[in-house]
Image (tube, rainbow, N blue to C red):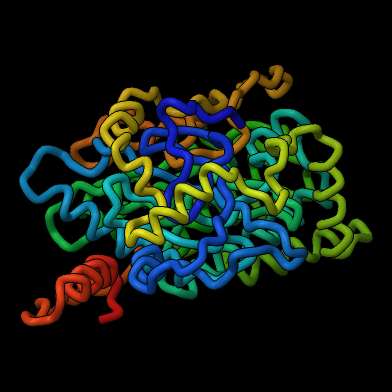
Amino acid sequence: MQALDTEKDPAVLGPFELLAVLGQGGMGRTYLARRLRLADLPPELEAAYHLTDVDQRPDGGPVLAAVKVIKPDTLTDGSEHSEQQARARFGQEIETMRAVVSSRVPSLLASDADAALPWLAMDYVHGPTLHRLVHACGPLEVGPYAALGLALVEALRAIHEVKLLHRDLKPGNIAIGPDGPVVLDFGLAVLTERDSAEALTKTGTGFGTLAYMSLEQATDAKHVQEPADIYSLGAVLYFAAARRDAFPHGPIPVEPGWERVPPPFVPLLARMLVHVAVQRPLLSEIEQGLVQLLAQHGLTPQDAAGQLRALVDASGLVPVLPAGALADDTDPEARLAAQRAVDEGDRPDAPWASADDLFAEFLAEEDAAEELPAAAKDADAPLPAAPAEYVPTGGDQDARQAPEDGASAEDPAKVTSYPLAPPDPVPAEPAASGPPPAALRAAESLRRAYAHSGRL
């Protein structure tokens, strides 16, 4: 977690006060933020931001969020309509992300796909990634291992129930928060797609993270089904058990090495990591296998969750929040400027609108995310230092990425999810002539916000 650059980072983004930089990646920059309680926020802005009703925690404190801002150069590939298509797909992906309701997936708090720099805000998960935890503390014991697996089963079940696939489940996309594991980086896949057709992925292309990708996904990511995520889950659990990847250079049709995996873990993992998709177990079978593993060691799922929580607490990896982050008092200057803008009929981040060009240039010049390097082949390798405590928008550098169609293998940002049956965008109705200019402006704000949401 790093301090804001006051000369380049905005102070407010939408109705959120930015507090610190959580990380950065190939697709943008991620901030720790808290919700501003602004009076008289116009309905058209509430609609444009897709704001949830929650503006404070149950204890009365402010809601903390992870706010992701998208790099300008990810919005266009140089073609005439590429930015329009990218924004439309980003808006559609926000809607599909909103459909996943689970404590194992961050809730979407607000978003603005039509902003100069599109952004979204989701629940902030206060804890280390699985990648950092395993490197720092070593392979997981039975209790934490099974607790991790059960939580990821719950997350994938919620994702699959709404006809989505994750397609990039990996240790760097899993944070261990106060309430257990949460799957991160879900919902931004659309920005890395470069297909002019409605399909989000072309036939015959494979992309994702090679070390956690099934053989069928490496061959044709468009037509994979739920077993591809099952394979990725198995690869994540293998890493948690062995502190190394099963197939660090991508899937090959052989068995992984089991010498560093505890024998009780092998039978279930062997079924998940087979290269024939139809032979992999269902989520319900994985859940049953993990519960049985716990029972064999005299543990309940509740015991296991407590052990995982204790491991994280003792690890020293939980990031320290900025001073005053949980206080109810926001920055008076930022709040006054944001409220003044709202009172004058503008957006709350309008005071910094003049800095858009500078901020865009700042993001465009940022290097790829500074994350932990690949898991060392030597399981006893020391943990490298990493400046960012939170997974940014882009993909991990803990494993090589498979290229998309038209992208190089070195691209740091890869997809995280995609809809199996995306809804067709519904065209907006043209604005009627005659109403006062203020009403027309409000209607235009609503039209842009909902044009690709399927709500019209």
